[in-house]
Length: 114
Image 1: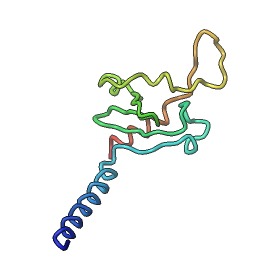
Image 2 (image 1 turned 135 degrees about the vertical axis):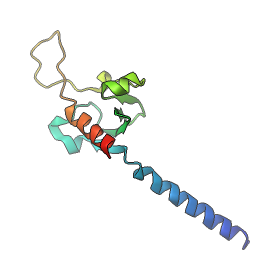
Image 3 (image 1 turned 135 degrees about the horizontal axis):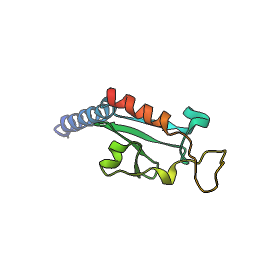
């Protein structure tokens, strides 16, 4: 019985160490519609923005990963169009205007600099 206690303590400390490493990477952050208000460019309410080597991605709640910029698309992320929100004022029925993806891209690029 007493032999197991040190092993359990070591495993527990190891798990705590792993949990602390994930946020320390600094290249992902959760974002929500509530944070951005009318500037929120997507049809989903939340997700994870990430950046690696200038490739900005958005991971939706269903775990699909979308490219926010050309670097991410070049690395194989799928187009964000399926979840990119249409602009509220449509002037041309033959062309879908979209809400600016700029605020989401800017947040991702900030992560690249961290």
